[in-house]
Image (cartoon, rainbow, N blue to C red):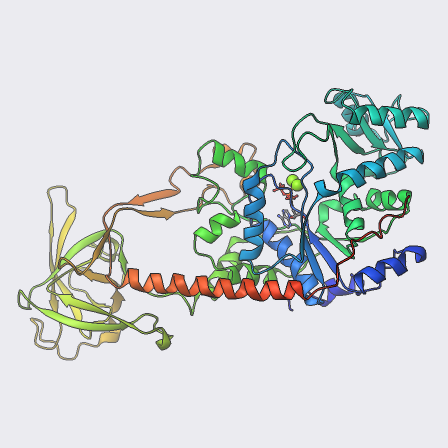
Length: 565
Ligand code: ATP
Ligand code: MG
Ligand code: MG
């Protein structure tokens, strides 16, 4: 509940109190919503979701849930050439991964006929016209930066001609870019969104759901407000780039005299160290800078899931950001902090020696073998213990030993002592061996159990730092074919500010280690944790689903928007 600051809540209307509803539409609207909050998450199914979408999902679904309301998952599938079935599936999977269940799943394309009828009505009301300007002319008129655009030559054609021409567009009489339908709003406005935005474009491409039925497809500025209206959305939550678009959103609902939802804008997530744009992420994937959409260096949700980030950490992160009304770049450290806080008491501590170097204890017998037990988590005894065996030879991490250590190095070095975690006694380095190139091949140590060569009975364990290890005895460790270690994908902190982000790619962001060693308990413990997490996810989805079912009686479709006949 802390997700929604008082400041944010005070800027939104309460359930059943949409200040914009016209009295004649209010009764119908309330009869349908029963005064409940209705929101929607409206992704374009043209790519995999990223961490920015997790913010939107959490706000859209979370706000509805907070008020015991309902949130739609609406696939905004108006661009047939960019959409693919796998994106639809993945988007739903990610919503569920985050612990939400759509109250209903809808598709903008389900409303293509209704949207077309709305467009005809708008044209008949003299508020839309068919335009044949090419894109350059339109862009030049709009983007000159020298004040308001001149009306285009098609703006004032007669209503009947517009109706006829729009029908001709639908019938496939025009090639792509040969014609479009535009709202006739206000060229004198200071807001460029009012400069006759496009409602319909010709596109001769088969659609994922509607096949070849349509040769024209609605634009976002037209379809989005009307789908919100048709679905009786009470709070149309979106990001700050849409502040100026709100004027045309409202103009359109009013022009058609349909139920007018209220749009609210909140900050778009910008995360340091990466960019959140499907188009740019696609470039990284297609040019092979990463190995697929779920490459752990990306901030797509499938990548974050693969990295092992629990959904609870995602929700915590969004919650800690709060709902802000101004954009700012968020430090990556804040995301990492949320992950650490979430995993702190649940992640098992198990040993992996990434770059093993052999360590031999001289003052014990050849067949020395001591069964040790160490807790899976030092602070969470309920997680249990794992057994490991200390033997005469073990492997430690290459970086845990230095021949010439700097003053502040507190791990192993000639003459220095460390604890092998789990062992009651420290070891002291007495010697080391190198190969011809000077690389350390073996570290020689003495076990300080009070009888060792230094004979120092006063040695205090707490003076030594503790390092991880695995037994060198065959069968007491598991060799890993390949360990992939990921560093940031970009060299700079803000690749979105670099002209050509491809020049900012860190060539060493993936390090591959061969021959790393795991302690034998790793696989059984990991398997149990994975199974527990799966069971937890199933439980959460079931809970979310039962909440979603507990919504409003929806036996009747949302027809309130049908203010026109
Ligand atoms: P992209 O530019 O990556 O394609 P988009 O905004 O076009 O993103 P949509 O699929 O249209 O992606 O987005 C669905 C919803 O997610 C929208 O309501 C959008 O505002 C929201 N969203 C997308 N990116 C972010 C972000 N970085 N922070 C917050 N919300 C976001
Ligand atoms: Mg988009
Ligand atoms: Mg976009």
